[in-house]
Amino acid sequence: MRFEMRFVRGHVEVYDGEGRFLFSADNEREAEEDLGQLSA
Image (cartoon, rainbow, N blue to C red; front, side, top):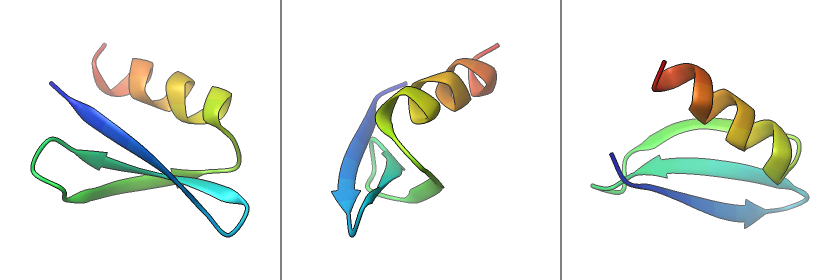
């Protein structure tokens, strides 16, 4: 699955390949960890 990270007002928002919001994270590392849990 494809994801997009957008940096918004000091945090990271993660969207799927269709542009739908999935979750937000404090930083890129945290977002990547959360994505790893989604795909597990």
